[in-house]
Amino acid sequence: MTIAELANKYCTRVGAKASYAHQFRVLTRRLPWQVAQLSEDRIDAYLTDALGHLAPSTVAKHRRMLACLLQFARSERLLNKRTVPRPLRRVKCPPPNPRAWSHADIRALLSVAEHLKGGTRQCAYSLIVPAWILAAYSTGLRRQDLLDLRHDAIRGSRAAVRQAKTGWPHVVNLDPASIAAIRRLPRKGPRVFGDLISAVQIVRVMRRLVKQAGLDGTGKWLRRSGATYCEAAGYDASGHLGHKSPGMKIHYIDRLLLAEIRPDEPRVPPVLAT
Image 1 (cartoon, rainbow, N blue to C red):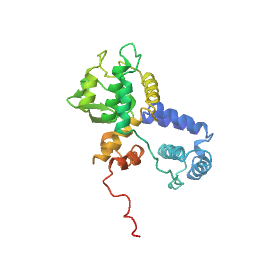
Image 2: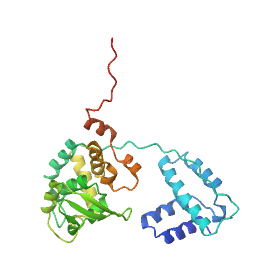
Image 3: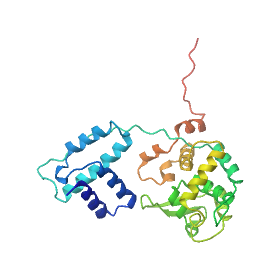
Image 4: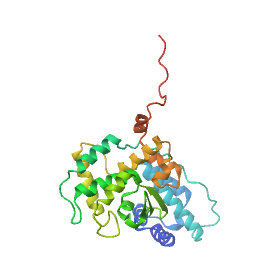
């Protein structure tokens, strides 16, 4: 059995999503190994070589996937039991330095969005894009989760969703501005946004909007902005982002923006006396 066949068997066993299974296929194309050859030493050698031409974050992801396959092969009794399991070599991945939009930037986006021309067959961009911006910022939902948001899931100022990435239920908050913007949208089906615009269309119009507003970034920065302002207000951004692991929020919080929001905190030592 090849490692690619092992990966297919593993994805079938755990009921992996198509995107996750695709990542395993991409990885195993690099590795023409047989399952019998799978070992900590071989994986360590691959990781060391991969660090020479791949980003540390990518190699760290490969490490996790290969560890899953190694454990699965042992559970299926496809490897020699005499081999004593040991941890794989570490892959040091430096933490990211995310960037997000300030409130002034988001207001600039909304100002431009209200005058956008064109639209989908169901709704004008000048209606749906401001509602998207406000809802994405206040809820912190990923793009697909926001597209899947249903009208009947909203009760008062909260909505209950099931996150597509993790499958876990998550309760989000909607501020008054986003609720008002959603109520102005036409109802063409059970979904608030998904029945008015597609994922491809929202990506394109957000790219166009950011360019017209003279800003950097993508629509994903709205999720980062919400997380950063939650931290600035004294709330744990993990709850806003829907993360089970508190350490994941480091990938979303803009540290520079957070420092600008909290100017009252001492960050510079007193000036030296002359």
